[in-house]
Length: 419
Image 1 (tube, one colour):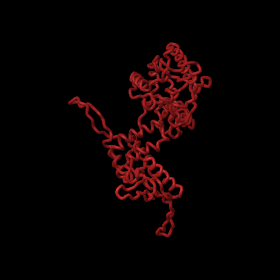
Image 2 (image 1 turned 90 degrees about the vertical axis):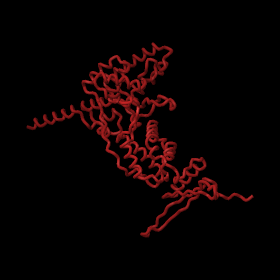
Image 3 (image 1 turned 90 degrees about the horizontal axis):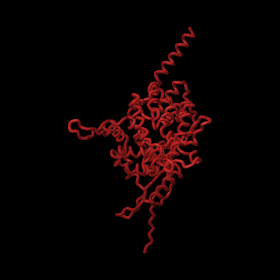
Image 4 (image 1 turned 30 degrees about the horizontal axis):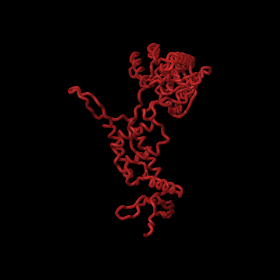
């Protein structure tokens, strides 16, 4: 029997290539060729060529393709669709992204990108196609259910998708296609030069002084009174407050060490779990004596709940475990439920005449109060855990009416002193 001399699938070779341009310059690059299979009709090798500016770059592309061929995961860039590329991207290139980020990316991809462009060949995707896709999202990208007043039946209609959501979708497209460029599947990113809609800033609803006073009275004795007060007067995010543990509370120094957040995930993904902070930046904040007292009251109340629950207690079991236990728990010792926290807050917000307010607006209220009381922007940034002071200024640059009035009063006093 004749020996089969065909090159094995996944093997390849490297060679240096060069050419002379019209202006006489010599251009050099490296070319790697990989066997990715055989034509079932002719038996001839099917080869794929990769190029790189350096020998190392071309070799890495060749080796990555060879491994993919051996594992059965290789896709010919000329044949792969955008939908197939997103599958690969999520599988192999999103390991550096957080759980909720990937979850949001997948949701938007399945809801918007895949139905519209998933079948388009990746190498044939163009900027006009993407622009048309974004334009259509701005016209009919959102499906809304409503009850027909005449028939009483539930029907749907298409409405414009918000500019912010379109921008978020663009961010996903840009990241995925940039990776496709990096691995050599396409030569350039067709999403880079599209025109995006102008994003209007979302109105915040911080509580007024009168509403803060009314809220304090409304939540007195409430099941979640102390966690609401902590968020309102420390600026913690909801997940940070729910994930606060006793080892991060320093009563003597009056400080809180913010290192993690409690995050709700589907049961298949582990349910409630501790997760990294939003920007991965731990911080220590100094809180007012009022907040320290709130936490002391919570400590006493939690100990009483532990004694009352006895063997049914599901939190820390002894004083040593208590040091790292959650600060805010149910009467059973389990963590609080963010959905229940939200629903209870909405009822309180209705009572004080602020129906649009959310739990997160307590954090906004803290920020506005801090600025009104003259806290430096850098201090506010550190307390809120923002990545930069510029971001803090951008979010709260609207300046409250009271701050404007105070500024005008200071200028008037200066003018009068000069007279």
